Image (cartoon, rainbow, N blue to C red; front, side, top):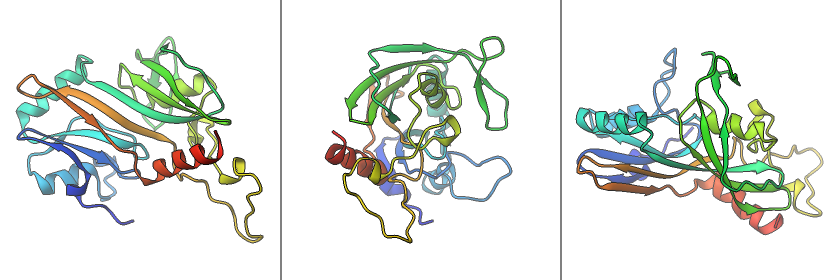
Length: 240
C-alpha cells in the first residue's frame, strides 16, 4: 500500500498542534503486537519528534485527528477530551432511509478487549451520541453523528441499534454499496465479480473544534477522502 506524505495530510498546524486528515486503512497508533505497519504516530514523529496522537480513530475510519507537538499541548487536549469539551462531528452513510432529528442515544458499551463491543446496560460504560439525517437517498441516508463520549466503535454500534448500520460495516451487519444496486441496467462482465464502491465502512471524522493553548477555538473541517467522495458522488447521481 502506498502511503501519502505526512505533509499532504495536514489540515492545520501551529506551534503546538497538528491536525491531519487520516487516510483510511492507516492505524492511529502502534497496534498491539506491533506489526511494524506505518501509522499516524510514526509519521508524525518523523515530522515532529515529540509528537503525541491525542485520540484515535478506527483504522478504517478517515478524517480529522489531533496531534500535539509538545507535552503541554498533549495535556491540554487530553483534558478537553476527558471533560468532553472537544466537539466532534462524523459523517456516516447508512443502509435505508432513516430520519434522525436530534436523536439522542444513551446506550452503555462494554468493550471486552478483543475488538468485540456490545451494548450492556449493567456492565457497560456510559456512551452517548446525537444523530441527525443530513441527506436522503432512495436506498441510503447520509447521517451526521456527534459522539459526546468516546467509546470504542460507539457510533457504529449505536447506529446498528437503530437498524441503520453503516454501509460496509460487516461487524455490525452493514452491507457494502454496489453500483448495481442503484444504477439501472448496470451490467458487469460475465467473469468479473462486482466490487463494492467503498472497500471499508462509510465513516468519516468531518469536523473538530477544540481550544489551543491560548484558549482560542481551533475549528477543523476534513474533506472526504477519494473513496468517500466517490460514494457520495455516485449516490447523488444514481440514488436521489
